[in-house]
Amino acid sequence: MALLTLGLNHVTAPVALRERVAFPVDHLGDALSDLRRQHPGLVSESAILSTCNRTEVYAATERPDQAQAAIQEWIANHRRVAAGELNEHLYALPGEGAVRHAFRVASGLDSMVLGEPQILGQMKDAARCAQEAQSLGTNLHQLFQRAFAVAKEVRTQTELGAHSVSLAAAAVRLAQRLFEDMGQTHILFVGAGEMIELAATHFAAQRPKSITVANRTIERAKTLAERFAGQTSQVSTMPLADLPGALDRFDIVISCTASSLPIIGLGMVERASKARRRRPIFMVDLAVPRDIEPEVNRLDDVYLYTVDDLGRVVQTGMESRRSAVAQAEAIIESRVETFMKWLSARRAVPAIRHLHERAGTLRDAELERARKMLARGDAPDAVLEALANALTAKFMHGPVTLLQQPDAQPPSDMEGWVERLLPGGR
Image (cartoon, rainbow, N blue to C red; front, side, top):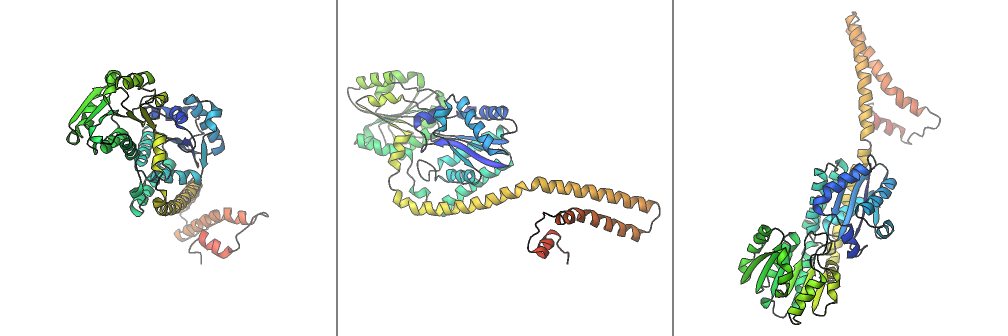
């Protein structure tokens, strides 16, 4: 069984393509079932990791070359993207490359924000979805579990996480360039998921004048808003349906929902900008697919940033992280070697199982013969000697025949090889 990772990320593909290839979280189980149904017997195990920065399919297969072509075609068809356009941005990592990649992703080394911890939770969610969809077998289960262990080791033994700067922190920095006094700003958060919660935590620390949370489920919006009641003079919620008529009230808009289509369009923002009489609007779109139409950036008084824009901001200060990165890479290489040894040992499991079954069959046959000899009155000592001789002859027949073949290439250390094969033989 071989491992294979196929995907694209913030390095290989622009956000415009990543949003088209992204899998909604609540559809991951159906997608995995469809992949298994489309290619039965070819993709034995599978899991999908889909975030704002990457979409990756992890697979276990007996035929990696055929599986790679099949998964590429499946992604293109499932996400309705032209194969030529998609394949230009895809990477395929077979075998050891797939293992190393998984460990680096879990550790935050392959993230837009170096060392960020959020990806680890997203990988755990991906593994859980695959488990629930019954597409996670022994090989991928071990891959993910060891990736989680490596991530913990990297975080506890290096300073990688200490040097990370989150996208939310970068967004605050950019907003501070536009608004000298953040305490006078009115902030709107669209959505109530993990990314919005993280962003709200950073912006609330600036003690803005008001915070509003807009969400389809108003109860979730209230739960999130209540967390920041003590950090601003005014906290409120609103349904998404009220957004078009209320957008002009906000200086800062941070959006991250699971919508497959933009929920904030050019016309909506243009009307809000006119109503604000040239007072600027700072907007951050953390969603993939995007929540805010990219054309909004053309408006003179609107400053729109995507996850890719923020990623470029957080790449500063790389010098301070290089030492931690080198330590993390060394840990990962060591753990990759250990995992590959485990995977190699697993390849022998079917042969070992078959060998045990064959030995059991021979043992049962000789025991039955010995019982018949005892039943007809043969001497016990003679029966035991006959049993031992018969078992020895049958167990030795295969190895001896193999060594006597003209094209056999026995190891140079013949005695040592025999000693390992039959311990206690001397």
